[in-house]
Image 1: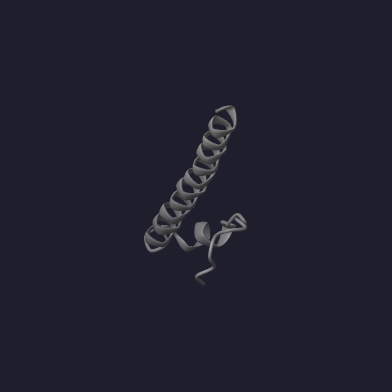
Image 2: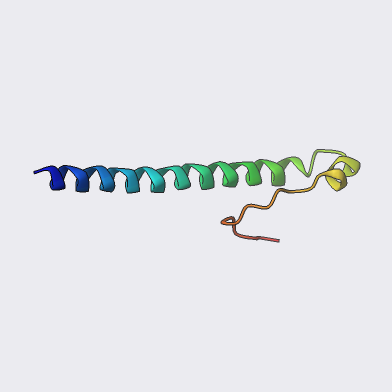
Length: 62
């Protein structure tokens, strides 16, 4: 009985890891979308000064 409970706890922790990664990747996608939209409005000097942060699991689009 204890082993079954431990397995469910492990399964729950795996689900939480996947959920956290999904939340982080969607946050990065939203920020990329906002950056692409605001690049049209912001002065060119500010756009050139900005450096993006490296995220190891974000797909490069440019």
